[in-house]
Length: 116
Length: 111
Image (cartoon, rainbow over all chains, first blue to last red; front, side, top):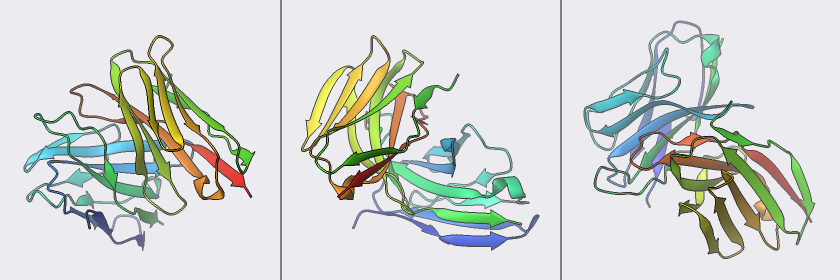
C-alpha cells in the first residue's frame, strides 16, 4: 500500500529536550515536505526537499532542522523545543520533480506534539 | 493579506444538499489548484486538482476555477454525512516549490 508514515503519532516533551519525528514514504517520490497545522492558520510549510541532500526552508523554518540522506526518509528535528512549537505536524510526499508537473501531495497521519 | 483566503465555517447542511466551498487567492501566478479533505485526527487527502481555469468533475465533486476573479470553488452534490470533514483549498505556481493552503472550512452534513 502506497503510504507516508510518521512516528511517533503523539509526543509530550519538555522545553529544550531534543526530539526527532521520523517520516518515510514508499512511493519513490523525490519531493518531501513538513508542515505544521495550527487552528486558524491552516497548514504552514516548515521545510521541503527536492531530492536526496537537497533541502530548503519553507515559511516557518525557525527552530527546526531536517535532513534527507535517503530518498524515502525525511526526519524533522527539533534541537531545543519550545512551547510555541506545540502543534500538529504532517509529513507529505509528492511526485513533483523538475521532469513532472504533478503537484499533488500525499500526507502522513500526523504527529501531535506538546511541549511543556 | 493572506495568499489564500478561506472561510473557516463551520458550514452545516442537511443530507442531500448541494454544498459550495470557496477560496480566493491573491497571486495571479498561481495556476495549479487543489482541494484536500481532512477528517478529524487524520492527514489531508487529495480530492481533486485542476490546472488553470475551468471545471473538473469527479463523481459528486466539481472543482471550478475562475482566474479572472481569483476564485476557486468546490461543489459537492447529494452531500452525505460521510462528507463531514474539513476541506482545504491549495494552490501553487507552475514550477514553484511551495504549496499554499487555505485555513480550511469545516463542513457538517446532518442525516
